[in-house]
Amino acid sequence: MRPTSDPSDPYAAALESVLRGVPYNSATEYLHWYDKSDPDPRHGVACIHQTLYVAERAAALGAPEAAILQDMRHIAAVFEDDGAVIVLDPYLMHLTPIVFPAEEVRRGHCEVEVDAAPVRRDERGGAHPARLTAVYRSSGEGYRIRLSYSKYSVKNGAHFLSRHFTLRSENRFDFARFSADMLALLTHPEQNSVSIRAIVTDAPGAGGAADPADPAASAGSAVTAEAIIPLKGFASCEFSARDIWLRSGQGVATPNGEGAAAEAVWADLERTTGLDRQDIEEHLVSAAQVYQKIADHRTELPDYHLQDA
Image: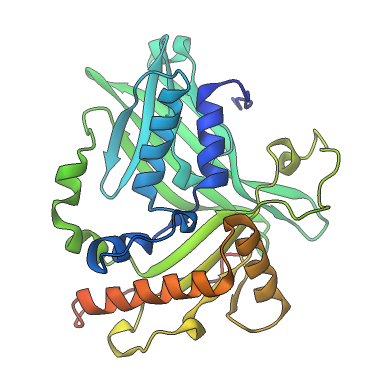
């Protein structure tokens, strides 16, 4: 089943507003909690806050209050609406809401697959969106929702699993409890980079009539741009803008300052966020420096896989 997006739908409208207007940013929390600074909101927010924002916006547009469900360091917003169950999870960049219809919810099992960003192009120009597969199963007095996010590999010509979460109806998110030990959260070994990731705003003059057969066109532009500082080796590193890598929507990473590919990603990020390159560089470097101060220097972080193509 592949639901379509309805602009008048509060879930679709809320999801669209966060995907397009609130970049994912893993750096901001370091500056907020340990540098006591107030980063420009155009830099974006951590995935936790993306989900809280989308739940608030959907409710403001007429949706019922969401249950915020937690799987370890990840959360998603789950709504129950006239028997249907709807999931919004901006971190996984799905382009339309996940909707489990009421009839299938009553039966206790439903599987939904929706397109997600980034949409990548193969050698022939064919569009291949990322995929988010969601499985709903009733469980005792509650339910389980499994979310599996896969991106298309241009090199291998196939999708590969990138993220996987399981939401349990009894695992309600409590921000006070979650944030009680921010040091442990921000220095968790899985946190091996600081980065900004945005769904790109179309360049002026890049528009045109959408091809309804093209999954990239059906939900507008769904190309991503990322600026990343890997943190492996942080204990002996003097972080600077030279440590930034730029990753295109095609999944190709290029060192900062090295050629047209890096410049194209910078142009996408500047246009989309409204920030200039120096602002973003300083933001990421400052966050990496904070990480360096608060993390245990005996910790060896796993490699960050820059190439995602």
